[in-house]
Image (cartoon, rainbow, N blue to C red; front, side):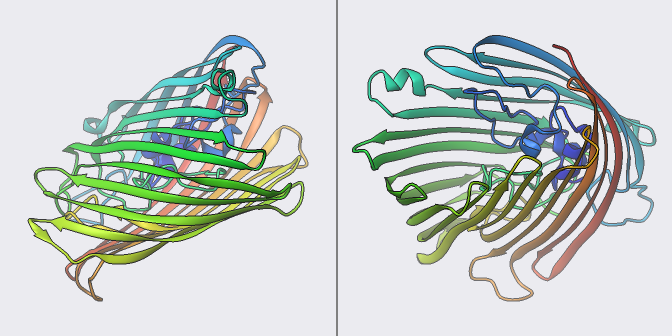
Length: 447
């Protein structure tokens, strides 16, 4: 299943593993975000936490909220592979997702943390049964830093996922921008995967309108044993990104930014190689109305590659981000597009030019207890320097939609359907498949 699908499946509770964000990967996407005042939102939280009953507002003090999500789904492709002679790809899967979320809002700092396990039982393929894990944390140290430098902000976040269903997209991404280069739509076959992403962000005001900005992020993706024969080798990779820049509050509605962005990617010894990007962006955030915000960034980066023992000439690649975010009392809608450079995960180590489009919607219906959610993602990646029919490329589409009925603030019932289509190509060979998932889940929080 795609990563996204799975997230929907675990519905409220934890990120079900989802993606391609497909079913099992969804859980990995981490349903750990927080709407708690001051606590912050954990990156990758689906639908802004609207489908998770453990997402509560915490104004001060410490609170621990356990929850459990159980469900049943039909999955047309539990292996994430094309049709093969003698391979039954369908199954009925039972899932249990216990989770503990902790909030702390104090005078010095705020914390939103979650830890959960994902257990799945496969009716037709019991050898696929597994127990996975996902954790997430966001730490807001702005109150502490403000005592030293008024108006300064500092946040740190970390997310970790272990699952046999590798994520391809961040499903239900209302934030607008992607939190990771590991979720651009590249879907591999079913295999154990662990992924960790750590990020820190700092803003220090220099004047009433100008601030100094900086951030650092690092992460890894590592593949283990596979439950099915892969179309090509799976490739571990790590990355680290450092940014620095300035922001200017040009008006109450306009924020201008300029950033220098440097990123290093390294592939595992089996694939061997690395590449770097060195560039910059200019940005503009504009408040169009109390409900509508525009985010725009554009820039360029210099790509240098040292892959398979061969260095390639440096080339310049465009990078950018564009998003529209609408939020009112009943509706949250995000439309986003990202253009960038990301690593490959299969076949051979490569730098890929990637395009990612995402549309996410949460809609309160006329029935007060009923919430509708939908998410559509498209991702495309192409090897730099390759021509049609050669090299490495992929194109993936994933869509999920459903409803959540809130019996009470602590009890959510969800019904979702997800579809994923993947088309990976390598040296003229095509590896294409699709996946359908229908799932019913019940989530209970205890507080």
